[in-house]
Amino acid sequence: MPDILSAPLVVEFPFTRSLGPVQSAFLTGLRERTVLGVRADDGTVLVPPVEYDPVTANELGDLVELAPTGTVTTWAWNPSPRRNQPLDTPFAWVLVRLDGAGTALLHVLDAPGPDAVRTGMRVRIRWAATRTGAITDIACFEPYEGEPGPSEPVPHTGEFADPVTGIVAPARLDYVHTPGRAQSAYIKALEERRTVGERCPSCRKVYVPPRGACPTCGVATAEQVEVGPRGTVTTFCIVNIKAKNLDIEVPYVYAHIALDGADLALHGRIAGIPYDQVRMGLRVEPVWSEGARHVDHYRPTGEPDADYDTYKELV
Image (cartoon, rainbow, N blue to C red):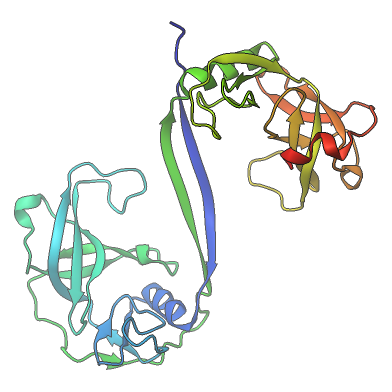
């Protein structure tokens, strides 16, 4: 039985968003060691503040300042912190209702162990030494035995110098991918600069890359078929924004390419031709990466363009 491949994979991208007046005031306030909430239509103070009332959907903007102290409403112990979590030592995830608030704020509690945490315990904010206008400006909560803050929050204009108007939140997923029998055979064929798919025994279509089952008929596939190496551009787009860590100058063309003998188009970059001369029906061939087991890009073969009827079902 052939070896089944597996490899660690990381999907990571920065998510950038702009902030409205309420969220901007909240995050800017954290930078200034000030916690802001917003009063809902029924008088409840919501923390973190939201822009619209969760019951009436009316726009909200009545900001108030809360004390940095509160009460733990529920918690869960984390014995093994992971990468980029707020603390690198064991801690408790907690929901804290700040004094004067009607809702709880999710954050972490620095405690020596789970026996030191309980629902109803009093805590206060420990501010980060360096603050930039993010929820991490609250480094954590810590146990507190002092006097509670005022039960009635103080009105606040929400105005600060140099307000935070946008945030970048990195998203990352680490996982191990096992491609299985069909895709392992596909990847191993690439080492020999060949492209293989599998034919469905029912509809007789050849799918590349193979999945081990026909996506149309749902039956298992096993008959291996070599396709290409040449193919036809079925459709394409022009990329004008440079991706991080990708050493390709923009603009460039990314296309769907139907390899000869395949019944499903795959993705590929088109090079060796000005981007504004790429077109549907263009005949292309692969250019392999030196020392790698994948196609770097596709370039024109010089053949006449394919007739639209020969690839219209793959657009």
